[in-house]
Image 1: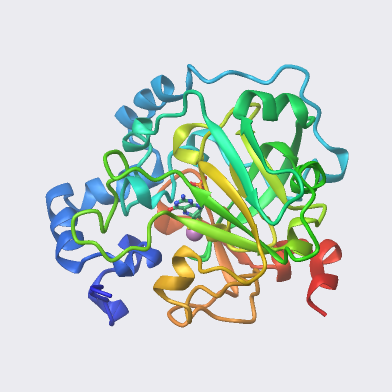
Image 2 (image 1 turned 120 degrees about the horizontal axis):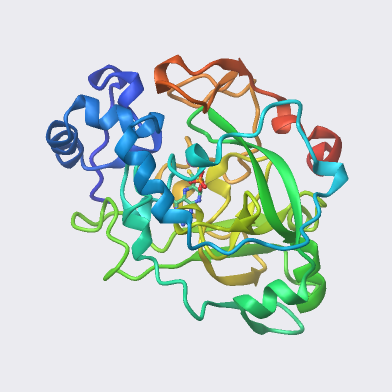
Length: 327
Ligand SMILES: Nc1nc2c(c(=O)[nH]1)N[C@H]1C(S)=C(S)[C@@H](COP(=O)(O)O)O[C@H]1N2
Ligand SMILES: [Mo]
């Protein structure tokens, strides 16, 4: 695979590194940093740049609100403040649109009109859902979940959506189905993130779960956040939210869901299996090969290097729901 790895973590100051960006072509990455200037690379991350904020308003004002939304009382708070909407919608990972956190504008190129989600593979009732029908068929609720990226930052997000088990019940996986794959939108004319020119990334972005993980109460399909439709940069119009796993397990902008018998290949696991395991449960005791997972930076206002650090919880705090899956 024609990947050029940055082997030594000291080559780039820690605050500028997107750990998952280690796989960027190094020359392109360095060139990007130089042309953006160091300040330019840092300020948009913090979301405290004035012009950035005014652009933000134009980005989300057209999003529809969900009327009559009820917050599920079982998932109504997590003993931490909800992350500011402006940050959660401006500090993103969406490699299809670039290898930095500042892709929200580039992601506006995602064509979300007439979106269909195909559900196929080992199911009794294969279906093609129209996104509007999907949102009428499954009752939408709001859930406040912790959200922990493998890069050791975290947020708290009020998602809108429905439990994955409702969709499972509708399509009825057969007895042979043991895993489910989620395939993100991919069109090389539109998604031009890192690797687009150099190659070497296993597009489309895919993720997968065991079927018993998908059936867990917590496994969620989000169609919205902060009471509105998902912004494109956050994975409109449908994404996975698996709060006890690292964020990369949650594929965005899903076009296809496939039920399969064998554990499927997934995007980050294919790139670096030793760094991004298939299971990827949040675990403070298992360090990433290049950094500790014992603590996490709370994405908040101000400069990214001054974000508060708090201890990371086993299963991201959801052990009572999911620990039994891993006995
Ligand atoms: N299709 C796709 N899905 C993706 C990613 C991506 O690059 N492409 N990044 C993942 C990672 S690493 C994280 S942390 C979350 C980020 O979600 P957010 O931008 O809404 O915070 O999306 C995940 N889903
Ligand atoms: Mo991530």
